[in-house]
Amino acid sequence: MQPHPVDIECIGELEPAGALLNPLRLEILAGAREPASATEIAGRLGEPRQKVNYHVRRLARAGLLVAAEQRRKGNLIEQRYVATARSYVLTPGVIGPLSAGSESSADEQSASRLLALTCQIQTDIARALGEAREQAKRLPTLSLASEIRFISAQQRAAFTRALRDAVARVIASHTSPHRGPDGLAGPGRPYRLVVGCYPAPPAQEPVPDRSRGGLS
Image 1 (spheres, rainbow, N blue to C red):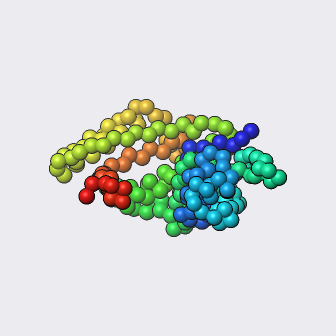
Image 2 (image 1 turned 60 degrees about the vertical axis):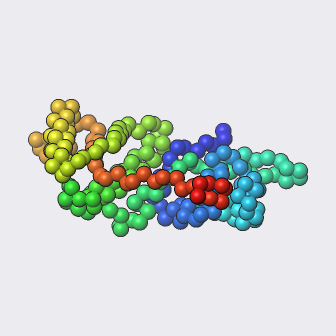
Image 3 (image 1 turned 180 degrees about the vertical axis):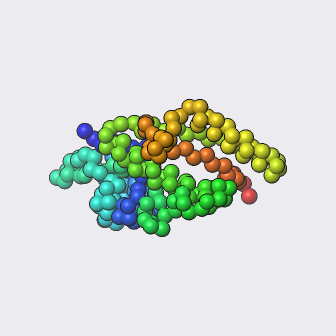
């Protein structure tokens, strides 16, 4: 059966991360979302076949490209490859003990705390997703996203209090106790809930391409 790329692959080890962080290799992976040979990719990128073939083999050794099919071209057999994923995420585990964890900051309203929790989410989901794929199971998750506006610090503080109280009520009403009276873990599968709010970056307007007759 011909392999198909997954939607997202999490990279948490140094070798594949090192193989990934190269501009030409990123272009090669983008061009191999469908099966393609080094010769085909080189033609699309306008690069020498030998150069592209070297990087294709490097990506294959790192497990980011896999053999898809072989085609005969004259007297030669051409190997085609396909990327393992359509998108990649470098998880904090790549930098090992230097990666941020939830204990990095105790201030729940600090940007450092939110960033550390985000790193922990990436690490946790990467590991759980890998295990789920090995067992051919779907990983049960929930994600909510929204954009909101505040006109004052007072409004933002009131929202924070109301949201904290609402989340606490939902947790108390719709989940099982996390710990039993004896201090041991309660029954059921544990889940981690993280709620974050941060200033949205300004939208980036497209820059006219003047080399192609854009507006001046």
